[in-house]
Amino acid sequence: MTDRGKIDRRFFAERIAPRLGAERDDVALGPTAGVDFGLLDLDGTGLAVATDPISVLPALGFERAGRFAVHIALSDVAVAGVLPSHLAISFSLPESITDEGFDALWGAIHEECRDLGISVLTGHTARYPGAEFPWVGAATAMGVCDPGAVVRPDGARPGDRLLVTRGPAVETAGLFASLYPEELGERGLDPETVADAAAGLDEARLVRDAVAAAEGGEVSAMHDATEGGLLGAFCEMAGSAGVRFEIGHEAAPMRSGVEAVCDALGIDPWKATSSGTLVLAVAPEDADAVRAAIERRGTPVAEVGKVVAGSGVRFRGEEWTEPPRDPSWDAYAELAGEE
Image 1 (cartoon, rainbow, N blue to C red):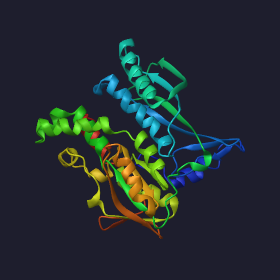
Image 2: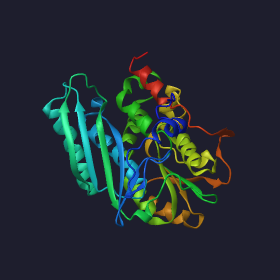
Image 3: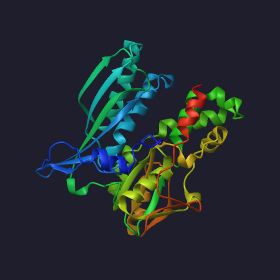
């Protein structure tokens, strides 16, 4: 195991990949390093499937926490260029949650799914002794699709242009500003800056951005910026595709309030988790069309680099081959008063 949270390629290759149960002809894409979804091909009808933990932070309020949690769960199917169609969700809840609290949580998840056209297919809900927030279950998102049209995170090709939506650390800054406004004030941030950063958490969603991009032109690869942030996403995409990313970070969008929060906490925003931010490798002739499709949604997007032959990532004058350790975990521990 690494200290980054996610397992690395070696751990996956040695301990997981050789033991994947029975082989079946309908599995068009099984567990693969750098790819966060699987694909079934059911006689020409595809089903993209991804499973993620459910994280619920009651301090956000259960409605807001529910919206945030469900979008995290839907992201890995959306980056396949597929609009999720079904959701299976399991809750292992602490005994402290009230019926009213769960109603607010579930109501928000229901509303987000309804608005996206997603049906809840099955699930499990229970309270258990020893269960604790925020990790309270898991969800499996599914999307019915054309199996031949799926976008893979490991599909970047030399010549592609690299686009980034929203910018770095929108999720991290939004979470810290929402959870610890007083502490940030004590570190010199004014209430307006903190409130601005906090509002970014409600923008940390990418389902419609990813689908719009896939419909706008030829997208070779898409990935969301989770552990390790945008730099982590660059490393994972380049490594899984066997190519090199050359990044000019100055061109990327930067949401207001993000830099101020990250500076106050001593965090490099490019290494901090930012669910809701997309990295896209796009065929050069379609880069402008894909960018326009995203911009029509009101989402900021910029071209930040290119894909070339080689390996690794060139970023701020340094060479990277492995994702960095995400600094937001240490900042959270400090703010929460943990050792």
